[in-house]
Image (cartoon, rainbow, N blue to C red; front, side, top):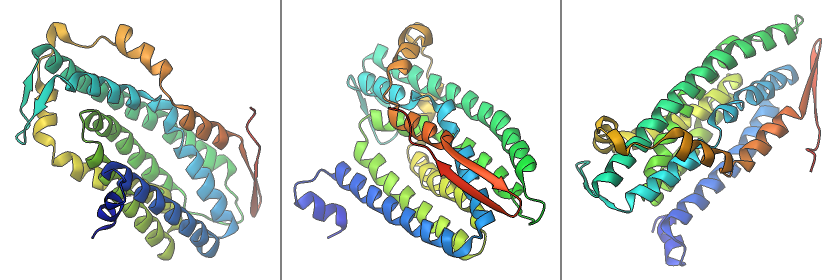
Length: 283
């Protein structure tokens, strides 16, 4: 039997089984990546690597926990609806319109957020690296940085689709997709290290999430395309009264903690070397 089937036989739900496997792969992948970083990157390159990783994590500012709201909106409206293999939706007309409106609104928001991220973070990183680069040792950071920003924008744009589909009840399918993402990310990161292109690893990790994600979305293209074209009209969800208040209540503590921790990780560069000093976040 496959690992998910073994876990199911032990009484563990399929979605939980895939989530546990994905987390296990992430742990193994992260541990292996750390070992490869120490083995294949010089101390100076390690400084670039971790600084680049911290700057890419700024995408949590643009995400704002909105994916949780999208998931809850989709779950609430999809209760009254049925979906078939051809992407057709049947059931309550108002719920249908509101479900379509939730998807359309979230795609517009994340399109703006991804664009804003590229326009702000990309030049910010270029200026930061240019001002703090060591003149003693030449490191090609431009390509890895621009690729990291580009794939981060694409990954951010895909987020609402995952949340929406999960909210529509495909929890197990999304969990299985995240397992494939974890495996692909680990493989690509390790390949970058082994091929002596370690600074591309952060971008390739995100790329490893995007490719399985796009294949997952392609299989659900009929449903998504029909909902994106569906006229919501007067039943449309209103941003100011229904969405924005929920964004402030979204459980984004892990993201906020991660972002705060990355800011409290002080990276100091010196000619020919670097040092990283982490401070504990205030409680």
